[in-house]
Image (tube, rainbow, N blue to C red; front, side):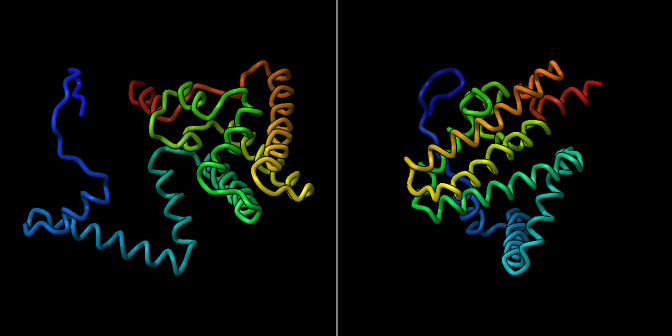
Length: 207
């Protein structure tokens, strides 16, 4: 791997799953706390498969720990539900997961924001973070409007496959864009923002 100084060095590495498996195999008392934590997390996930509400509550608690307001959390969860209904439609109508989901998502996003998902992440100075977890209240609302509109138009058209679903994606995104432009005209404020919660948290600490 390339180091901070620009030199190539042989490096042992692994993803989180690999590292956890290695930890589990270490016969040392020092690894015991992590093993116990892994067992606890595994048990919690099993319980969530039986009672999905526990997973929802866990997400709410994690967002609270990150400093999100109750209003923001509610909007984020509402947006996720709308997103899930859209991806359910895609799944049942000949859209391939991952690549084609990403193409349609980017099309919707670019239509309402005038930015690709990547450009929006760059604007917020995000790398591996989830863009939606760093959206403002307004960005969450307009994203939800775009995806809700897309699904309803797709259902009306009975759109199947990638090419047919590109049409409702553009139309749904445009509905949210028109609403965004009207709001910006009334308030004089931009909806699409470069703010992210990492910087907002740092500012609070400085105060």
